[in-house]
Length: 260
Image (cartoon, rainbow, N blue to C red; front, side, top):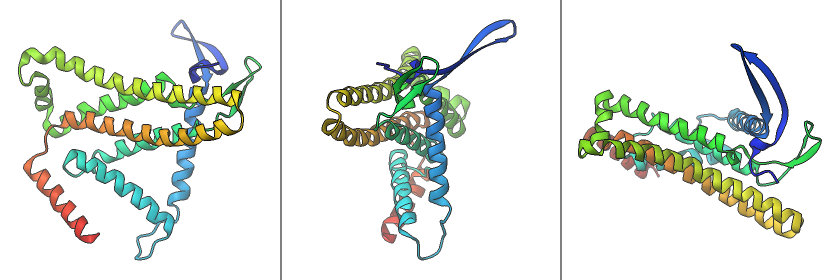
């Protein structure tokens, strides 16, 4: 049984570059990532092609606006300021992890022409390389947002607070926090997929159905947890909101509560 989609290779090709030999492997991680991106693209296209800003909207648009408003409120509550600059990356992480997790609820069989065998589909989030990639996006966003808001020296100052002697410990904490994001997501998704595959072979009717429903629930929870941890990680790099930012956010929140 394959524990990672990286181990399922559909096609391999060797090539030379700058006098060195390289090998390209088309594995299930790449195929699954492309499938997830295709699903997200198609979902966004069909979900937004009939949107309008009139007084009367359909149920589907009302549902989408409710989800987006909920996500944005969660981000703003954590930031305690307007989230227009950070909401897109958090929402993108949530949607990608959510769709990827749900794609692995049903363990579909895949034919592997390279070996002539069949393999059970494992979502791309079950690959450590994918979770590391998502974590690197978050870790890169921390200094970018931090420098954009506080300036270069202002951002670096947080590493020597409250005392400069804590500099190496703050750096280690920054790196370990990002690694924990990757390990948490990878472990949960991989273990859930393997458990479903084992139960499917033991009892192919009742137990897998229950586990698939459980997998849908855990997929949503894991996407929410990953997005929340990424948000907390980025918020720590931004620092406390200024009095002006907090006042604008509180005023906007008050107006929203009056409208509702």
